[in-house]
Image (cartoon, rainbow, N blue to C red; front, side, top):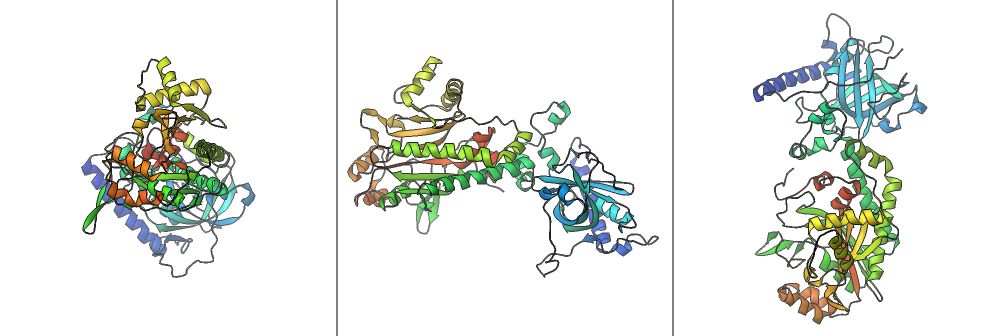
Length: 533
């Protein structure tokens, strides 16, 4: 009879001194090599007693695609359930924790965000020896292993694993790829809930720099696995929704001859015998695609901003979800399309990623995201009035500061019960040179921003499609006309009225989940202080 025991590894205490840590690392490395040597030569494990598991455990030789085991079928951890009880399966996963106890070794195997308990128990009939048990207990955490096992129903649910009603009773144990003995961080520490009733648990924290310095390990936590699957979902939904609406995906240059936004915050790169810039936006090329009769376009790609902004929501490189669309009579035709795209994305996330959102919520405090359909749209003067009623005064030609935006977000949520809204008719003075002025108010513009939880996630506008007017506005902003000559020239060939916007992918995911830092939603973030790993 197989006995279940829930694996609860001991919590590690304070970090040892450098000397002690170095000594421990050497000892662990020596132990690992010894275990691997024994695994590769099972017959040498115990000369006094025959090893009945010989040839059933050890370390694989380097997998170099020589064709071995190509007919072996593996089962995903997430698919282990009561329907396969009694079956013998192969599983490849990481060994998250292990604990040898007498003639048994309890371990937890992890594959992506799914975990299952493994039991290796001495059993002559099943050819499981003491040597195999000892070998399993010596495998280093985070090593990749191949396990052949029988699926067994558990007497009680295993609360510490995602697979709770069955466990694996091991028959073979093979190390595919060993992890080093001394890990820079423990997955169980990196995955601890940020909110807990246990004061001791709150003391164990892995700080952000440690996480980012060891990002490969950090990304293995269930929350991170879920976050980046949700992020992939946002990209897929964005593409699918716009494609169904007749949009064409395009790919624009990232090396350009002039600053996209007409500002100084650009990265200059050496380009043969001259200089060029990394694109701040695909803006100019989206518009040129409209002039080339594509009518509706979108692009997904890297955007670069040379801003020395060390905040919770700024990156120097991020993924831009950009779209541009021609319209017949009014730019609100485009504004409505973008707004509906967001509500469709939010609904898609709710319906298709509920389990991933719940997984993130196990580590971080995630408040359900609320939105209206159709989305709430306010004009800039209305926002100014709402803030004025709250005691904040803003000038007619001033932009909203970050604190103003956050306060407005809270006030809008309280008044309209939505985390998403559109702010239209921004002051002309605070928008880029290609923004169309409001025909009824010389101080306003046909431009808009969109917000999630009080933070901007899209900036857009109707673009000027008349070449003479565009030239005048560019000169007004001090832009060298020669450097954007090709851009202006494209409008001399006839161009329909159009509008669009640019979205920051990482910021959308951060705010949808209610996370506190954009670095949590950037797989390998780039900011003014970080260009590695």
